[in-house]
Image 1 (cartoon, rainbow, N blue to C red):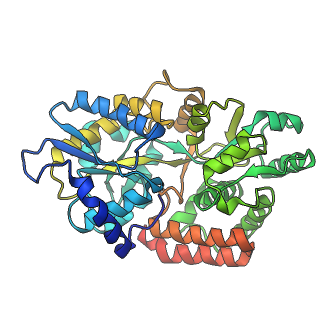
Image 2 (cartoon, rainbow, N blue to C red):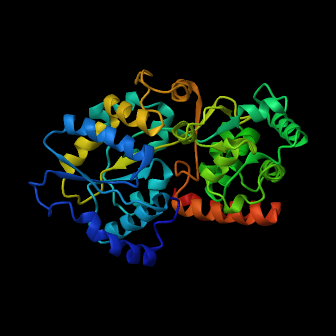
Image 3 (cartoon, one colour):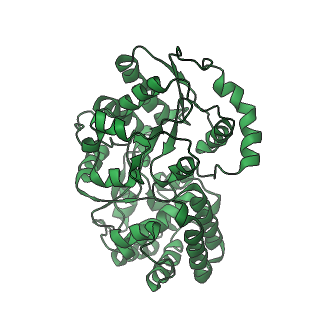
Length: 421
């Protein structure tokens, strides 16, 4: 999901194996094409259910066109990205493809592979339907290149209510100091893993939530736009707090996926887990109801967002059909149908809460009023090369705990990739 699409040799080798499969259901280029190939990694679970909901609206709103499912399963999206890289390199793009909204699109934009959708935003009224902060994050040199299908929140702390109650914790901490005190209470009560954690991007998410608490939203945003120095003393202090936070996590974190960490929470072996709000849908699907949620302590009224979006690649077979798909993606009806099943919330602020579960209704309210900041591991704050560099640095830190080395690596990544946003 977070691999660089610029690993050209691997992409071509891997993509060649799948390109025939991915293209097999599309027509040859031509003005008469009515098929719209939609390329995603939504192959099963809630993601597939959400896609099916969106397709249902598309079939009604765009009856002249035929949906073609170009999903590539496996690897949490890494397989799909490799196939996509090969197809774009060979100038055989799908009619549209899924990508994280924000800076992750910068590679495609810099390579002149996407069409500007600014005129469609005006035509479809999306500039008024989406929050101002989201529009600003989507805009690159005055142009917008994607339509978000949803919004996920990254900075959510999930909890096991029973474990907390046994430790005498009855109120969610709203400061880092309060959170550390609660973690100590949990340890004293015999909980071996107060905070469940996985590997790779899950560690980046935890670190970013802590950075928001330490820096505030304006300085946190500055990490990605050049306004905040990664070499600063405040970053050093944040890394030291993060090192302390890791002492409350499971020692086998570098072997765990996020769902493994989630199982610790469900089994009562952990009290907390920092994870995006797709966890609510997953916990509900697994029948676990004894969970609570809160914004990560110290984040205040900050909504760290990420979004799945769709684009219009250049040289597609069916540009008009793709525009109809994109209009559906951005519509209130399409966003409601997709997000109720996906476990995310609409990017639009004018969609009613009827039909949404309790967590999503709360998140929809926060989305309208909270201060919005992006996420690097989920592509809204930084491009894929930057994501990879940060991931490598934090993986090393998880093993050696070298504060100076992590800060040096983070500053180097910003210096190398920041100008390419």
